[in-house]
Every structure is written in C-alpha cells, then in structure tokens.
Image 1: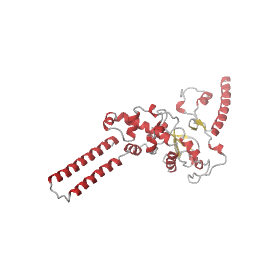
Image 2: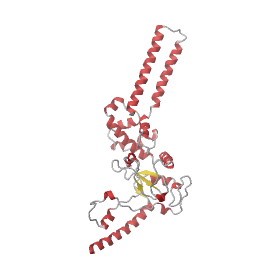
Image 3: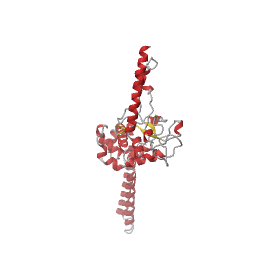
Length: 316
C-alpha cells in the first residue's frame, strides 16, 4: 500500500473514532443515564481514546522514508536523519535539480497536504525519490552517514567481489558521476580496486548519483584500517595499515566494450587503446594524489605504445 493511501486511511479511522467517542460521551452525559460519579470516568475514557489517536498519528510520522527503505531494491540506502533533511543548508542547490521541490520535500517529511498529494501523486513520488537520493548522496559523506554505511559494509549488504583472488571482499556502492540520470550505481572493490555491476536488476537500476563519486574513497580515507590487504584473507575487524600506501590505489586499465564504436569492423589497436575508459577515484571531484601520479605515468607509457602501434600500422 502506498504511503499516501495508508496515511489517509489512518487519518480517516482516527477521525471516525474521535467522533464516535465524542458523541457517545455527549449522549450519555446529556441523557443523564449515568450518575455524576461515573461521568468523570467517561471523560477519562474519551481522553484516553484521544491520546491513542494522537499516538497513531505520531507513529506514522516519517512514513514515506520508512516505506521507501523497506521497498525491494532499496537495500543499498540508509536512513537519513531527520535533522539533516530539515536543515535547509544541507539541501542547497537541490531546488534546481528537482521539479516541484517544495512538494517533494513535504512528501518526504510527511507534511504534504492530502489534496495536493492526490492531484500530483504519480509525479511527486518520482521527484521525492530523486530528492531523497540526492540528499542521501550528501548524507553518506558526513560523519554520521559514514558510520551507518560502515555498518552495512561490515555486514556485506552491498555484496561481495566476484573476483576469486579477492576472497569474497565486501563491496561499496559508488557512482560514476554526480549528475542524476546518467549512470547507474556500480560496486567498488577496495582490494582489486575495480568496479562491478550489481547482480540484481533492481539494484542495477539505481542511479549512481544517489551515492556519488566520493563515498567509498572517503570511507577508506576516514577509516584507513579498513583498507583491505592485497593478499591473504579479508578481516574487517582487524585490518592493519600497510606501510606502503602507494600500492593501495593502483587501478587496472580496462576497456569499455559497450562504448566501442563500429563493432565487427576493422578497428586499429591504437584507436581501441585511446578509446579505452578507466575508473578514476575522486573525492569531491579531485583525483587522489597517489593515484593521479600513477595514472599519469601509466598514460604516458600508453601514449608511447600507441605511437609505436600507429607507426607499425602505417608501415603495413
């Protein structure tokens, strides 16, 4: 059941119970069928019913977020604290990203008027998901957000690396871009430092912007003892920091087959090498220093090799 329908049902039931209790108490008191000694008990019963109604209304607070997190396919998300959502400073700029931003924010915080919600229910639900996802990307790079995601990481809620030599290393969600509606979420392995697609199609359809490009690398930066070793079994509870930090951020060069043009045609090796995409770890848009040095050296070697390949192809 959708949260708007469930919320309306609770409100209607609470309203009916309140009216019935009020008229029952008023009728009994007016008819004088009970003694004056029992009238305080009736009033007390009415107050108890009213407090019960208010408790129901309090329990359905933040109903939309609870419904969203419990929906299938949203297991990667963690709950964003209410204080973080209500602080407008944390939402700076999101009004330009989300259509009907005020109404979407009211829907997330369960403050949306029911009449407006019925008129724009379909579109608002999509915009509310987008808004919560963008808020989530900002939340998980805070101290409290990192703590919540760390718990999910230790439980391997995001899955484990399919690479055999990684020995079931837990994965972390990451986006290839911070702009929504461009790339779906990927899973980053801190051991082989490579990316993988989620096994579930539900998780594979999640927008990568809901996790951002910063999160996994910032997590390892804040918790360096969690950086997995390059060999041996993985132990999240007892990971020591390697003295040679430069070896931790080395990336593997890979070619995106889906991005290659002219499949089946004659493509030169040099052209294929130049079109090869590689993942670049970033924190707030900036490459990590050690990784940037390594990648610049690798790209220089690649360029020299491409020049040699082009020369050989021209001779032939």
